[in-house]
Length: 231
Image (tube, rainbow, N blue to C red; front, side, top):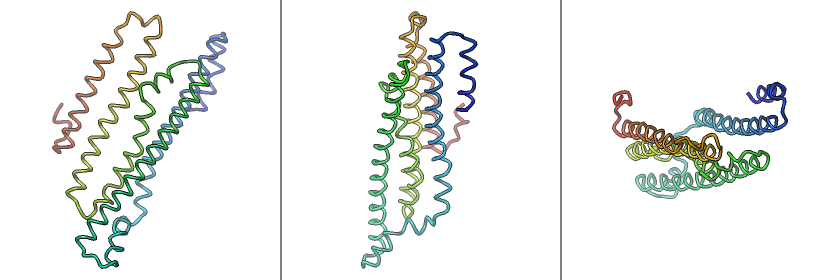
């Protein structure tokens, strides 16, 4: 896709035959290619993390501290709880660190993009917290994948927390889409040809529909009722 975008840029410039449009095309392609890099990285993480976890012996990994506590002379019940608490603390620390690193990386990426592009759309993306919301995606995926490992001896809590994370994933998706909608709205408001358009109303209607779908999806997860039954 990136090669294709760079390949068609000279043809677009040749058709438009103006330097001003040439710079706009270059800026747009630069933003698009940067976005494709980010999307590709997230998709690769989503695809390969579960496959990597399948190669590991999850039962052995989930009882690592349990075995140590048993060797230290603790009872099985106490060892199970301490194993769960220890792994949960490690998971929370990893999630916290990953979230900070990804957030800083995305902020630096958008800052560099804003310096290289003349359009202010990327500035609105930062103002509406798009990088901050997107940064939560990979930590959430880590939490979803490792929750069964942490709570392997406590299926009730595993089910409860897994459903909670799935509901949060819906909310996070809404936050990301809402941030993009607000960024697009703010950007279009700077254009003279959109001054007389009710952009705020359009954005509110889209968000209402989005929240309705999100609430129905969350209710379906909590109750176990298929989403199709609500339509």
